[in-house]
Structure formats: C-alpha cells, structure tokens
Length: 262
Image (cartoon, rainbow, N blue to C red; front, top):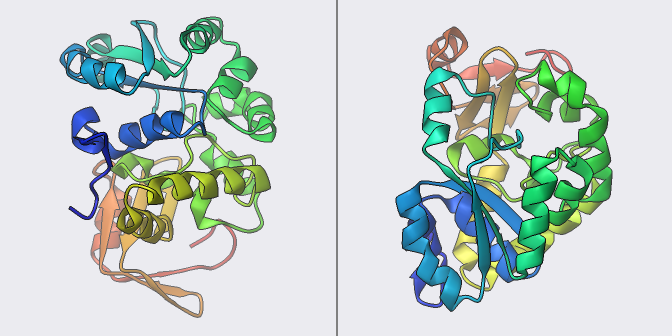
C-alpha cells in the first residue's frame, strides 16, 4: 500500500474518500494547521465521527455556501445541486477555533478565515488584494499567482489538486513564496512520519508539467521530458473534455515560445 496514510490503525484516504482531505486532517493532527475545512456527504460524516472522537478532534458542520478556495470553482446548476447535498465540516483540536472559522467564513472575513486555516499572511494579503480580478477567473487565483512569479517551486504546485494531489491548500502569493515553501516542507515532514513512500510520490507529481488556461482549465502532461524549449510527453490528463485537450492528444510535443506562450 504505497499510498496508505495510516493513523491509529485507520487508513485516512479511504476513510475520508480523498487524499487531499486525509492530508488536511493529518496537518491538523500534526499542529501545522489550526483548522481544516472541506465538504462531506452526510453519510461520510457519520462514518468519520468515530475517528474524530478517537483522535481527540472536534468538528462543526454547516450547510452554508463555502467561499471559493483552490479545490473549488464556481458551481453550475448541477454542481449547485450536488453542493446542497454536502455538509461543510470544520475540524480542529480546539472547538472554539472551529467555531471561529465557521463564523469567519459566514461573514466573508477572508483574513481571519485564512489565518485559522494556517495560510501565510503574505498569501492571505495576496488573496484579498486580487479578489475582484479572481472573480473573473472562476474565483481562481492561480493565473494571477503565475503572473507574479519569475521562478516556480514545485512544492507549491496547486494545479494537481484537481487530480487529488497537492501539499499546500492555499494560493501562494507567488510560486517561490518562502513562507509557503516552509509550510510545504513541514507538511512533507509530517507525512513522512507515516509513509515516506507517499512523500516521494507526492514530490514526483508536484514536478509534473502543467498547462493552465482560463478557458480550458488544467492539462497535466505525464512522463514529460524537457529538451531545449521542447517538452515531450506520453499522455495528458484533463479536468473536462475540451478542444485543447483533443489537440494535445494528437501529438507528443509542446514547445515553450516565451512566458505564458506555448
């Protein structure tokens, strides 16, 4: 079980139905994040309640509409219906912090909410400064982060969250943000206490070549190798069927012309 994440005899990924959710809970347990928050089906919440009790975690549930975070996008009608069937869960070792996080989100207090989720202050400031612009990008700050970046640290790759791979859960102010890198390294060290092989696999995924566009979303190139300005790949993962993906699947090479131009 190379990807297993076992805590107190519980395999967390299977328990929470997602690697990302499992890691978020682990980071609360390891005191890296004061609070974590994600959605669960009502039955899923019932299934995980015994684990919360055994791990001395407290939680609060809410049906409020969540703010847009990296793992979400503006829902269409079908997604909105699905969201109505989900329960928003705030998890912490401290019940008052979980309560405060729920209140902060309800009041759209981005700064306090981000602080309670353990986000670096520089990244919270970045998120707040670009809220209006991000609304035009499906509430996604990724392209704004890219525009502000001259270098890229793979530990801060948040694009693979759509495929259940990531380390940090916030939009970094730039892709070489020291505070975010420090947090990512602490998170990997925490994961390594339970599964060193999983850390290796996460790091490998974080180094994946990603093409990110506002119109067609995220394209992940598997097995990509660089030679000069050319990137040779074996296959392409996608978030939804679109013409760009169809075109990429017909070839095996993508060439970088300049920054943000391939």
